[in-house]
Length: 143
Image 1 (cartoon, rainbow, N blue to C red):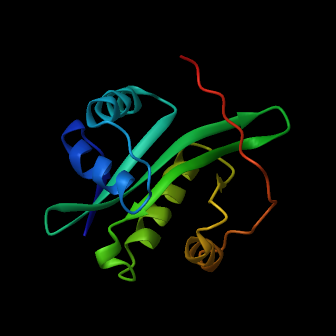
Image 2: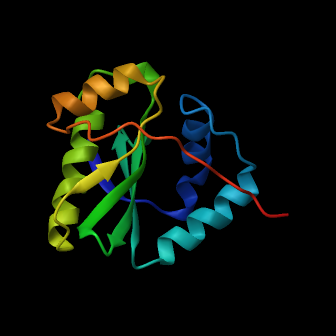
């Protein structure tokens, strides 16, 4: 198994993983534009894991800096092909992200997970993550 930085050519698989199992449907061409931006951004990183030459999961991180705490890295997404859950891929991606975050002088990692994703919560807790709070997520989209 290999972990590497994502490439624009990975967008088809990344978009497929976003759609299922994450349930984030987004037009492929728009996702490609977003990935292109992320790959050029100095404060974002996207790593993919390959198994037998095929991308089977990814983790996306973004710098989280505020005036009330230390610099952290924010996990924006962590997803593994559901057909191969339980093989250590999520753990390996998370460990890789933690190592990269330390190299970037981050003091830790934060993440949000939907309340319905109880299996993911168990996974994060098993990896040493501590539930900090419950919150409500708001959004306002512009035309």
